[in-house]
Image (cartoon, rainbow, N blue to C red; front, top):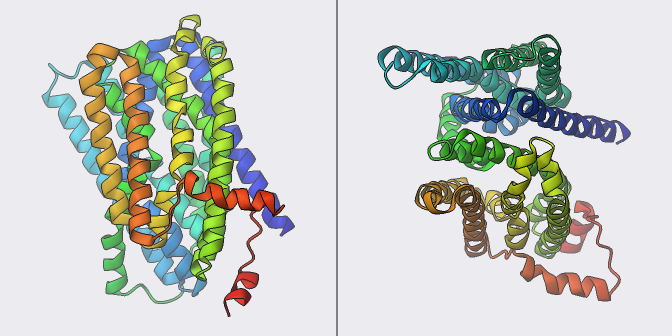
Amino acid sequence: MAALLSKLSLLTLARIAGAFAMFLATLVITRQFGAEMTAAYALVLAAAAITSVIATLGFHALAPVVVAADAAQSRAGAVRAFAATANRNVGVVSTIVAITGLAAIWFLPHVIDADRALLILAVIALVPPMALIHVNGGILSGLHRQVGAQLPDSLLRPMLVIGGLLALVVFQPNAALAWILVIVNFAAWLAAVVQFARLRRALSSDGPPPSADERRTWWRKAPSWLTISLLWDYFIEVQLLVAALVAGSVEIAILHICFRFRVLAGFGMKSIYAVCQPKIYAADAIGDRDEVHRLIALTNALSLAYGVVTFIGLWILGGFLLALFDPSFASASPILLIVSATFLVRALFGPGMAILGMRGDQALVAMVLAGSLVLSIAGCLIFYPAHGLAAIAWAYTGANAASAAALWWLAKWRTGIDGALWAGLPLLARQVTSSASFAPTFDPRRALSRNT
């Protein structure tokens, strides 16, 4: 147990340090090179992130589950076959992306000028390493090699980026955008190579390969997981690209910075879910519905408390924090508050996606998230001319609110579990009056003994 806690602490600290390094990278670019370079940097990262997820064809999301199951049954041959298929997918899709991008640059010179061509080339170069990091990280996680899975991307890559940028400030203070993009690409490729080396050492060719039915199962499940991952984990990147259709460079830079603050603040919410969600799944697995409701109520209460504290903190300090990048950005503090309101929305409606996931309704989740994307795009395009950057922020938060409400209702309809905050308030009130512990101390053996 001590070793597990030590590893979790290391990985958590690495993720926080990496996120802070990327935050500093944005600060350095904005202060030293200007908001226009920040906007270009943000758009390259967003486009590369989304395209790299598509390049995995959903196998990065399947990897932890499939590989963990095969590894538990000592089916090393099946694990190796899955890894080969996932990496081959990345190679094929990355090649298609490269050919498409280069063809666009060659045949559309009147549309794609030199600056845009540079951005496209940077995205083409970033897609393969980022996609490999996604799939190989998932495979290593399934093999319980969490350090090799996460540290290259969560810590090594951000540190290389901030280190390269600081060196650029010292030795090339008037550097062009191309130098920044070279640093970002170098960091991504080195992280991918280090991670791939760890994967090669972890794989074994012993054992039979997977059956044809298993391979078909991979391809059947992958599309739903791809959609969910793209629209849940990378919704911010999608929003930035949508904003690029209507907003100017400075506005994109401001939006990117506000989203960076939101990502940093989101680590607390992720920690709450990381602790409570596995216990919810365990209680559901043995049919302890009362414990499921109690843990969902606790999760929502903790999430709301964290969201309120975070929102108040950003309300007080938002202007000051934004002014660190540029004094004129302080006036954008309402934008920061709007995008941060998603913490409160998700706490109110509860973990609807997780509840549906317990019943295998990933396709339903994917449809809801796709609908929220349509809503967000429509909000940006329709209301930006009249309301500017606030329209983009409200479109993001409104789409999140709509998806959270829809997932809550669907989860209640499909499973009978009401995951909303208000549904758990009476239960929490009874616990307060009876002096019950609020700690998530679910014990499957204790619960099982009550049900037998």
